Length: 90
Image (cartoon, rainbow, N blue to C red; front, side):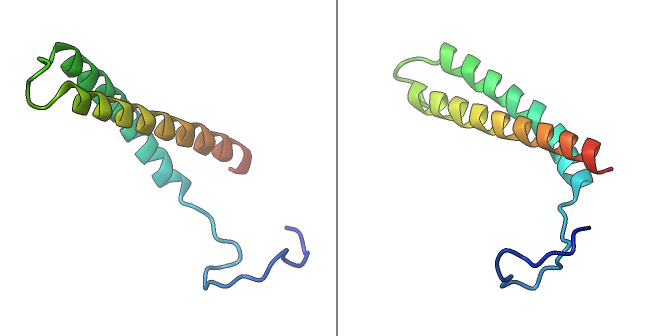
């Protein structure tokens, strides 16, 4: 532990040594990374097979595909960060 003064004054009521729950973040990342990846593939296949004038429209399905792909990347990045922090801190 370093005994230095903080760079800025804290305005909240959180403890000075607050940490995120790495076990929960690991569980959520391990759960949602494959879930969002499967949703991405499912929406992509659904968009590829959708009729041009069907409901939902192909553009909507492509939007869902892109959103799920972004969430997959976000969950994967969080998984990498959590694994790295667990390796260095624990």
